Length: 546
Image (cartoon, rainbow, N blue to C red; front, side, top):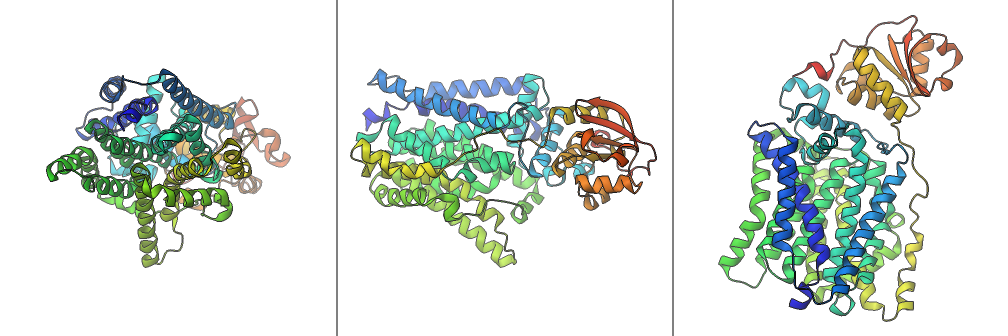
């Protein structure tokens, strides 16, 4: 046991990164809690200090094989670098968000508010502009806003790179968990890399949250939840309370990013700690060390944001689990790994984690059924958290049943059914439209603008995030932000005073005759209507609300 405990350089590297990001989210939240600014230089020092402390407390200098260390570190760097580069490439060359859903716009509103004011929103007058973001857990938004401040750019440009980075980190964490869980004779980077490959098989889940739906907060919460599992598996191998501190820090950050995953994470953590063969006093101390940071953050946020429980009633689009989405190979390997892994203590921790996630999923489904809802939005979201555990168990199965290399590669042949996108995806946010929106924000009345965009989300994003109009208003309730509807409005001479046009060449001739060009940005343009009707509902911009 001691020998294998010395062979975890990947764990240390990932712990350093996780501790830095988690401390950034928790410390930023704490500063605002005591009415201090969310100060970028202060948080940079805090994040760096947490990362250095994690290295100091968790680094294991006595390594048996220098070659093993190099192979482990190279594997983590390749996984993080490869996944990060691939997800970035999907948004190339603009690197702007490519998600096709309104969630990302809402997250951007809160990120921009934090970046602009260095505070979390409290004024009730902001509710029409930020909606549920007024009470939303802001951990991921603090990270994005501070990154924007450090690099001195609009945080919009860092949202997709941050999503790519956290997807890459989660993939590397799954690799590191498998490295700890696999049998001693199969604990090699090659065997553990199978877990990272299996994670990609349900491609709808691997990429869907980040590049399809724009679940910004959820992606970050998934990564911190996976970090909690890594620290717990590491602690089971050799109990060390520094690893429990990492559990607590990652759990608190996961809650601050998106709280829905926390019950399953805490349940797995408590059960593993309580079932440990140790004295009552030692177990009690372990529980306090691991759960105190989580409990403190949960208590403070719950008491100060009583309306935040409304998250349990949210709905929307989400991937529905099915055999076609998972692939029979992934499900079969996960089931085999669950059976075989029951004899291995560290694999049992992964099983426990999966069971707790499925238990919370069942509880949320029962709550939906009781309330009469058939959407099962949050229960389906729990699937995102059980897939990393399934990938680790699948790698465990491969290591057990593959006696020779040929049989091993045949066993993972179902991976050939996984087809990730092989070309960059189109973002609803383009550089030209972004520049047009910023110019409009600085020079024209925000409530007097129409949007001619090929994708409805482009217009919605311009209206809510860039121009700062209210999310809840007569206009947003009535308008579709669809190109054809805006064209019809202008043909009928119902257009507003101004418009942002994504592509002038796509506008019908009879509508272009009604436009006077103000500024052009490539194919995009800002125009004035020759016969405007007026403004929408007289709403003021979020810029004027304090």
